[in-house]
Image (cartoon, rainbow, N blue to C red; front, side, top):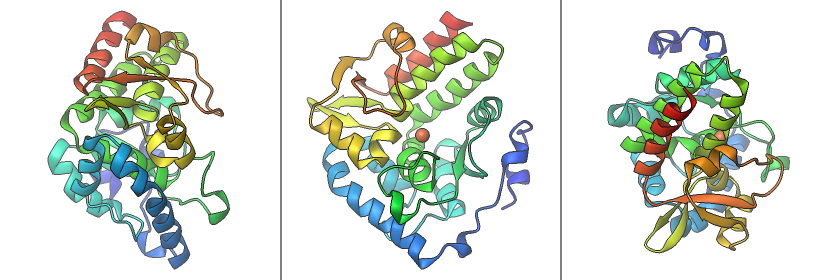
Length: 251
Ligand SMILES: [Fe+2]
């Protein structure tokens, strides 16, 4: 499918849209994907939020091959209207928020090399698709993320407010945890896609606080270090509500 016709509402993000050349992935690249998935799944079966695991199966991710985004979208889009849309790399904020507002998740197609299995500074398809996209099959999370994008798009003129919204993203989408059956479960993509970060949480190293929007909006974080504090929600309704409240407070 041509992304230009798939994304009629995108303007700022248009120059960053690419095609995924799925046939061009090498056997070695599929093997890297397989190794990354097999390394994460035993921990995630026990410690990931049920909604993540359900999403993983719902969108048809496989352990042995890099996902073809057209196949993912055929399953994902009818559920929540979201698509994993291939992009050329990091997006400027206005393009990123425009895509979220249109239920298009900017997805890199590149996969890390075997030399950087644990950490890659640039996002790759493992972080973006394995880490993020399964949650987009969950209707409440799906609505939250679109609303988040719209709120941020309207705050583009205000750096300080945008920074606060960045913290909301960090402590939910990237490093979110949820309490389920008395246990802390992972749903943020940074925890899902990184064995080191996931293990750090499971070993009880970060302080887990109850989710509180005021605290989250003020909570500074370092991208390059393991997280010292995380915020646990009781249900995904809480982050949806948080995006609504943030909009009221920062508008
Ligand atoms: Fe991410």
